[in-house]
Image 1 (tube, rainbow, N blue to C red):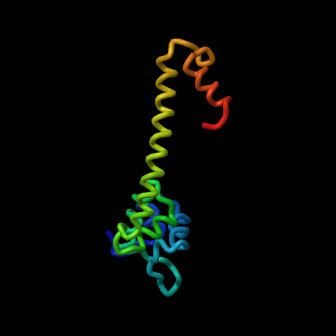
Image 2 (image 1 turned 90 degrees about the vertical axis):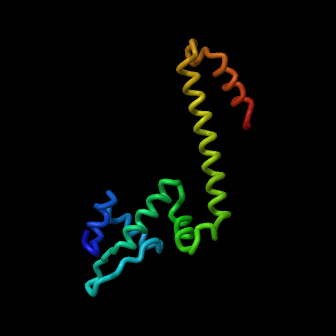
Length: 131
């Protein structure tokens, strides 16, 4: 690997459009070296940083949250932020499990959806108002 990469080379390495890297730079997530002509050069530390950003995004963290976490010497310095994110993930997982249960019921139910007693009770509950 070359010691430094252009923005196009780095973007290609991670399958990203170059504008994403520019956006991350505008948010302070990346700080590439600049040549005299203004062109960006990315070194090994930048590659690791992009990998960390991708990992954080895959974990569902927003860019601003990532900026906070990645700017700390230790991510545990922002344990409250991370715990809140875990709580949001748990709520999303619970909703996904409910959705999965509904779809599995639809697959197993011998009735048409509009004739299903389970669906009828769910509809009635929703018509009664917010849960």
